Image (cartoon, rainbow, N blue to C red; front, top):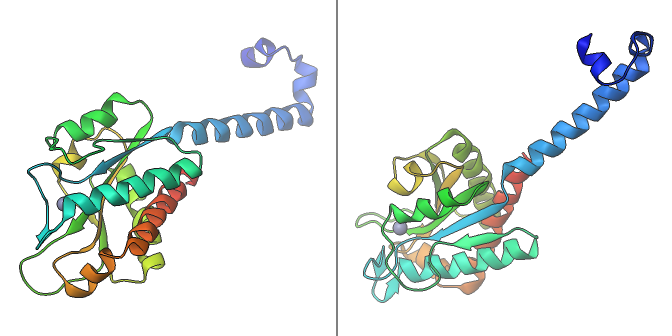
Length: 214
Ligand SMILES: [Zn+2]
């Protein structure tokens, strides 16, 4: 009852159902708005590898170049949706793994999305997969992988837990997307096509938007 008088309601007014109802509606609207605002205000996009670290490689096709290209496309796409982002690298430089999450950890209310392509020395696996480490990262990874797998129509290798250093050191929701195998012929042909890379970037962006709406 102390609470009621603090808000300026008399006992009689409080007794009337409509006051309680009005207060309830107002508080529900307020808490929903607060939750939406709290989800994130900036996306830290992390193009994998760089500098002397080429990542996966097939001839002169380097993972580090593909990752940066898709990251730029993702940044442009998010910009068009009114979402701010920061890249951990904007050119072909080496950044130690531990420094990448630090960028995001310095920015309040951020999420971290690392962009990679797969490479294996055996067999011919194909498709995309997305990794996470923390619980919110699992939600983010599921949103991204869902969009990417549905949109591209290539094999869906799923959402997976991983102890990758870039994810482990993130205090915020974080995910790492593998956008296809440059070591596998079919995937490599797709990855070489700028239209595939644009679509991939947009689908990652749609996954991020989905996570924001959750
Ligand atoms: Zn990689």
